[in-house]
Image (tube, rainbow, N blue to C red):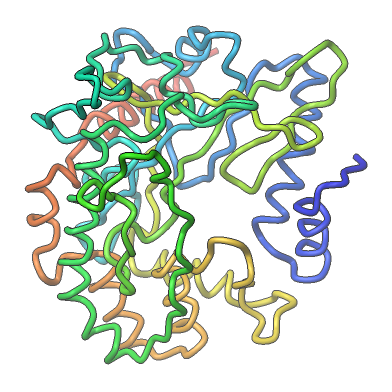
Length: 378
């Protein structure tokens, strides 16, 4: 498909010259979207083998089909926030059977009991008005063609306060882990300053929730921007399918944004990411992706936009190339298991980690049903 956007020229370059994994994924998903549209599938969800889409409200959404049938037609893409699994042992054989602890995604956080923002005229600011919970509200829009996401000038105050608390907790965790990072002699580039999102005229510093993140890995070890499902047909019949925009989202052919629903609120589905569960699996993954690339040292490219923010990912790259077993084990215990300083108990006080037993139980029930069907005579 001819495409003038620089993103896709860069994708082709990364695939052909660097053998970049994400570039290859984008090309495969683009091909899959064409096939899905031709075979009249309605939706395509791009997830990895260590991920599961979980529907907490089983009575309302017994499976993915029930959920997607409810999505209003104007939403052409759905973003599912990811929860990152926390292994409680360095030895894990099957994360789906053994892991039940997860870190909360920042996109889902709200602090209860926060007073609304009051405008000079005496009215409650639009973003802080009380509303009936609605999974498919336009105020949950993550992207809107030609308009501001979610329709607000700024985030609701209850979300701002929750993000401030998360940021403070991350800095507290980083203060404990920082010396270990130094002892391992891991060198991380500074995180580039993000453009300010607080552009309303009455913004004040005490409301800021986008302060600098800690230099040291302190919360998620993998991505935190969720994964998306997209309609295979957008626009008039015959329009080519949408395009993958990285591995976490989609755009319309030509680059226009899609009307994207961010799943949040009571009963909203989430993506469970069972990343890095078990030391051997973690080490094996990095040994695989730290070799065979067309980069100077053979490991995965570090030039992709936003990769500097994935502190744990970059640190694991350095340690894998160094190849010191003791350093790898120490890093895994400190930053991936992440409980050398009782961080899980500390984060749980703020609702930043939670235990979910239902996914394990449902997956086990599905396995038993499948095994019984296979074992039964024809």
